[in-house]
Length: 427
Ligand SMILES: Cc1ncc(COP(=O)(O)O)c(C=O)c1O
Image 1 (cartoon, rainbow, N blue to C red):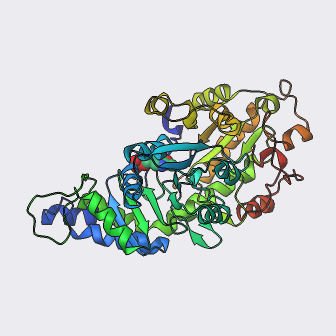
Image 2 (cartoon, helix red, strand yellow):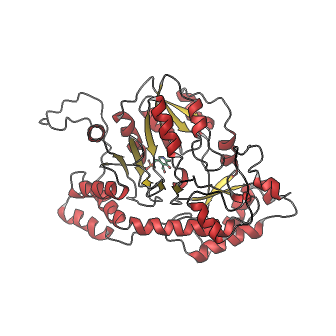
Image 3 (tube, rainbow, N blue to C red):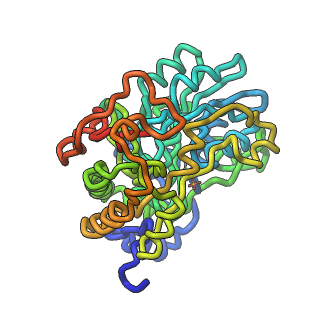
């Protein structure tokens, strides 16, 4: 494939990473006791606008300690989106509680608040929205829902560093939130995670569970009142995290610039659906997903993915819905019921190269490949068909297609208006 290969994501380490990691090595501060932990926690929490940050070894651990801090355990239910990465559900299982699934919104691909409302029972303890691919959820509706039901709201912000909803950053619109710093994230430590909260009490509980439930202020007598976890982050990872946070505004801007260009170039391709941005929201385009509508595009996802790979463009298919997971069925989750949006996404969606350092020329090449591969003879495109979203999913009331896309329209869409064109305005 030669030098033209475009990976789905590559890491940018262009700041103080080497210098700070060098400090750790020189001073032999390589465990979780070094000063970079607190510095990274402070810097990332401040960047997001949260009161407290608790660094842990990965995003799944961050979700787990957040759930434990909220007191969620056996007998409790947590409502999560069916369309998410399995870690969202697994963390609930690690806490001993039961994940309950709700289908995605056909436009934003995020947890549909109405579907979540229908899953509330007397056992519900929390709702856990996930800002899928960096696109903020309808946090207004979800906050109202959680408040009315008297349950906690826990944001899984693993993919949404710096995303905004009505002026507030992801991770600051709920009781507690969890981030991942895996290597493909907008801010990375290689492996890592962080809990954010404004509550000093919840933060103290997270620190307690993160560190084996050692009593925080008592002399170390190796007695434990609760079962804890070693979810600590090392100083080396935190050193990388601090350097990344110093560049977080740049990486955020690069991801947004790339996301806008993809939208501008793909919004007029019939049969290629893009993720609709929630009104009031600003996505950070962690990943640029597309959902193929084979009846319109004239090709299946498998054909398009294979074609892109043959041209040196790497992609990843979307997650499988939680109701399809054998692991969760075995655990005892109710996997019956219909999840048509999640199924359509899982069967037809994939994401395109999306790393912060991706060049405009590379995006143009990828989009031309997608546009040129459309098999117009095979597809049965009609403006009406395109506008209505994917076959089999009724668009919500009030969803209307629009006229042709323009760069300006695409940009406007980002800030939460209707999509630029019916063909790309969600499912
Ligand atoms: C939505 C979501 N939640 C949780 C996680 C778990 O994060 P980690 O891989 O750092 O454990 C991920 C990972 O990417 C994710 O996408």
